[in-house]
Length: 272
Ligand code: DGL
Image (cartoon, rainbow, N blue to C red; front, top):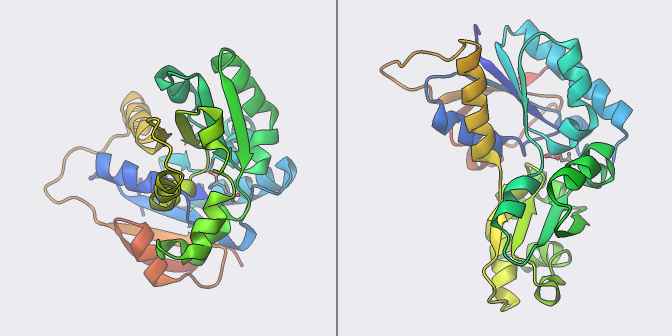
């Protein structure tokens, strides 16, 4: 496929970013790689994550992509600098939305939900030092949330077991005066209905905003395509199909269709 945009994540979470990008850029073709065999990245070392990202970028470049959208906060913080130095195509990458949360916060108390690896990374610490030195940041690694999305169980919104998995990390909010919750992992936007339900159940009336940077990243992607003269001109019919590869042998088609706004053409494993 000529001149598509390559998108990847540890699994299917990056489809939350892909949905925003495809809505904003309806003329563009996208190839998505889910490294589902190696998900989650959030409990792996930087070296492991870098190796996986290198394999995926090489594969995407072989597919002639014109640009790569790194739809994984964990990988951005672990290795995007190295990837940008190694590969010639522009790489647009998502990072936890601390900056917009700081701008919006009245209470100056923010809850950052992300993976263990993200929260422990030096790059996250410097993001925090640069943008949030006047705020109190509560950090929470949400072990189990990625698996909830990948398993498809999160689609059963009213299921009490799901609510329990979500609630365990949100129970301190009423005491803390937090008014911004940052979804610092691309899997978490798919859990938004459950997160909202938990907040409502805690009867916490303070106005809490949920910060999800998918749209901001899609806008940034558009700017980069324009800057590099890579944006596709308008065509009559928008592209409604996504080409998807995985490192896993199988993907659940029902799950794919519920997570992705485009119809998905699953091509199989991208490496043997
Ligand atoms: N969705 C990814 C992120 O944004 C990675 C989650 C994981 O695999 O642990 O961080």
